[in-house]
Length: 177
Image (cartoon, rainbow, N blue to C red; front, side, top):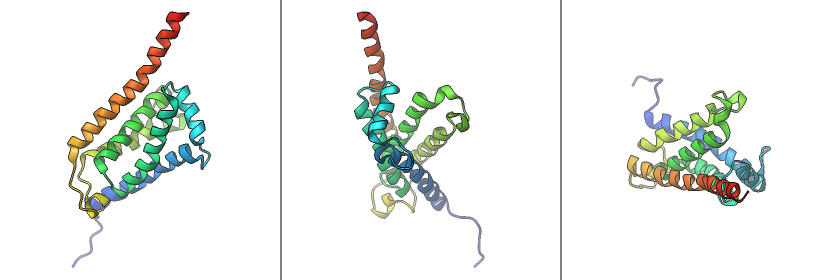
């Protein structure tokens, strides 16, 4: 049998998912645990306040654990469409709240890095989890793109409610002055 240098699509997607998931999980660990120079949950809550998310403690917890637990689940291929949607939203919010104004390149704090991670999450949200996933190892039924889109819509609406609260509070303050 001839040896080929080509790996399967299942293995390629699994490897990409593992690397990206662990990178995202490491960012979540910075936010949750304060490791690797991260802010920890108290510092991240202050960051959410500065970004205008209300209630800041709630959104800090949601976003930090979405990265930590979601990154690990993504790396393992567990509940893939659900986790991929959460991570897509997380990266989109990071772009909107922290990176957009800084341009494209990561070296200047731009969108390059979260855009890449979010795109990989989105691709995996639509893709079949493949043989190298816990979804398949556990015999979970394929949830498909419909579940990805549904979670994406619900999560985006939740974010917009959190983001909208800032405008409502600002309007109240401006009317009171």
